[in-house]
Length: 386
Image (cartoon, helix red, strand yellow):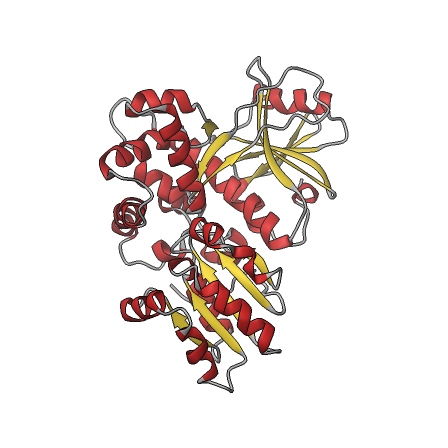
C-alpha cells in the first residue's frame, strides 16, 4: 500500500518508541530520521557482537562523529546497551538516541531507568482510521485488523497466521518466557474467547488445564509483549454496586480474529461484535498516547449486568461509549447508557453502531462508526465528537 502519514509526532531529544511487532516503528523512524546512524539488533551478526561486547556501541557511535542521531532498533534484545547509551548521553552533549522496542519486559529487568529520565517513553499502535483516510474500510478492518505489516501484505490472512505462529508462539519460546509452547498455544486460543470480555482467570486456567498462577503469569507475558491489555472497571463515586473484573483485549482486531477458532456453533455476529469493540478500544488507547493525555480508559459494569463498553476519564472530562455491531438502533440498546447517565449526569455519552446515518434517541447521540473513527485525532477530546 502507499505510504501512510502517521499522527505520531516525535518529541525533541531522545525517546523510546514501544509498540508491538508490525506496527511500523522502524519504517516510521527511518522515514522521519533518514540521516540517523541506524543500528538494527535484528541483524544476527550485530546482535551477537553487541551482546558479547555492549561497549562496542560506543565505538560505533564515536566512529561516526558527524552523526547527531542514533537509531537503536529492538533495543530490548540487548538491555545492557542502555548503560552505554546513558554514558554517551552524559558525555556527548547534543547526541540524540531513538530506541525502539516491541517488549518492555527485558528493559525493566535491565533497568530502563538507567537513562535517568533523559529519554521520554512513547507508543506506536496499529493504524488509526484517520491516518488511513479514504483507504479506511471498517468491514475490512473487522476481518484483518489495522496492523501495518498486514495491510501492506499481498496476502493479509496468511500474514496474520504467520504473525500468530512465528511471533506470538515461537518468539515467546525463544525469549524464554514460557517453557512449553504447547500449553501456551492452547492458552492463546482460550484467551481469544476472552477478547472484549471480563477476564476470568480461573475459567481460563480450567480450560487450559494449568494452574491459575500460570495463567496470571502468561497474561502478564502478553501485556509485556504489548500484544494484549486489560481494561479496568470504572468505579469512581459509584452510586450502585459495580463489577471489578477487568476486560481483556488483544491489541489488534485482526490478531484476535486469527487466534479465535470458528465452527458451526460460533455465531459470526458475536465474533464480529467483539472485533468491533476491539477496534474502538485500539483507537481510544492510541488517542490517549498520541495526545499525551492524562485520561484513562475503563469499562463500566454493574453487578446486575448493566454494562457500558468504554469510559474515558481525565482532565478533559468524562465520556462513555457503547458499541453495537448492528446497523439499526432500538431504544432498548440505550438502556446501559441511560443508567450511566443517571449515575453521572455530566458525562458525554454516545452509542456507536454500524449504520449509515447519525441518530438522536432520547437525547443520546447514535453515531455511525465509519464516520466516528476517522474523526479520532490527537488533541481532540473524543467526547466532543458526540
